[in-house]
Image (tube, rainbow, N blue to C red; front, side):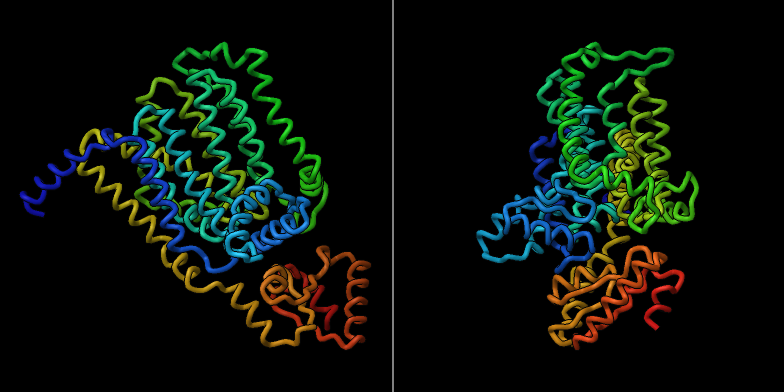
Length: 472
């Protein structure tokens, strides 16, 4: 690059000062960018089995007027998705909630980016760190990917970030109204997706918001007043209590006392899934991002007198060890976990920006491009071809309409898209009595001259070949 080009870039970068851009323009840009990018790569059909359950629950709730849950309940997700399904249905006359489910997650993912910006702005009191954080998070591979196929992570993340943002306003204005709303928001995130419960301790830690300096710790009198404590506790207890009564107690019981494949358990601080989780985290951050995370962490420790923000973000980042050591680990769990890493990155970029605007913006653009390149081929393929939907429609063409399909995770897709009856193998294949009853029912169906077909997913959980042996 010649001298004239460098001078032109410097002049241009000096002319555009991020701090001078109005907040409203930033918010509009973040929303349009996040929404547009996801609409550009949205799945043409439902991608995940959980989403099929959500789609059916929304449709049945609207048809009957009674609230239906999905897998693990998740009534909050059904309620939120009704907000987009009802106008979509009334305008188009289409009964399927497929498109509205996809749009809901895209919409709330875009709102999540705005909430993240506002939350970080309230903490660090500048625009550079929150803007960099919001853009990096919006385009990060895992978050971008999971918010294009309607699995409700975008909704969960929205309510978690909203609770933190409203809590930051409470600390700024001492308003119990914002505090009550934040308490409701964190509780509601749990009945959207129960995995959000891991962030409740972080929420109450941020409620205390202590000032931590060298040899000095203080807590504001406001947070220990009886009225304030009641305000933060009661909305949470009411909403969480409803969820606990409806279905959460069943999840807790199953995860503690049962060992079926639906039980989710923490396998210790080093399990066979942890190396995979590290690979996924590195994929989500890139090598440049990891270096910025290290640099930003050191800057936050050294340059900021109040150490609480580092402790808070560090503990948030440590939730990686919980999700990364689950027996049912999936990379999508790392979307919300990655937020503090992008904050650390942005602190590093902010330090560079103050030293050299041109260099920092070049690094930022390289990071944005590399993050997008990580996931673009995947979401582009999914946008052009919905495998589960197309496969289900293909199965429909191959079999008589009265057929029964034996399947496991694919059963929801075949039932929804192909309108065929499906049966899944028993959850506990080692329970001989249940297995015998299931096989007996299968034989009775065959005697009634009803065709039965079996697809590969029927053996998905047959590690010991028990099901194969029974069918043979």
